[in-house]
Length: 182
Image (cartoon, rainbow, N blue to C red; front, side, top):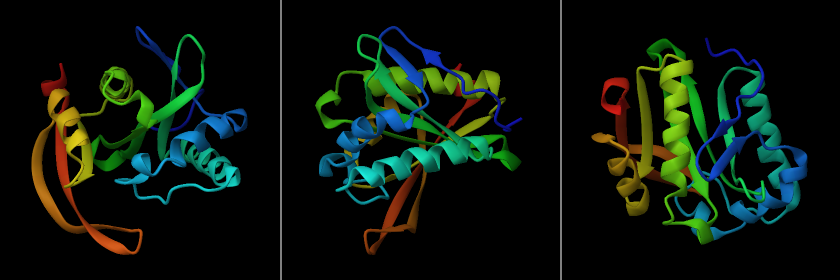
């Protein structure tokens, strides 16, 4: 069942995953105003705090409308949002597409692996997912390494699957099944 109930907080060794609120606008802006973060993302680099507020509101509406869920990633010691991760539900397949981003100064510290393992466990156990899909731009080597590390396998390259920032992008689709995760 993908209908929204109360927002599920998830905890790991170092992280607290929670919903983002308007109070987090500055933190969300800090993440998305960095062109290194948005380079492989289907959104433009933010230049105004109002745009960060729109991102937060859009994600809140997605959760309330049962379309998906997006957790703000915070470190337990300061509860400041440094990125996000979450799902867009594909109900007819008992599947979800995963998305994520992290402030560049926190890259390569194992934070995203830790966060994604927590949400995958939630998706498979609490939401009954059978499959998680990730689609990344071919040039995104860091994401490819992360997905392999988490047990995903490449399924196919989708030609001109994405269109953003004024041009088409080929995307590589990766899948992780429930059995492979556990």
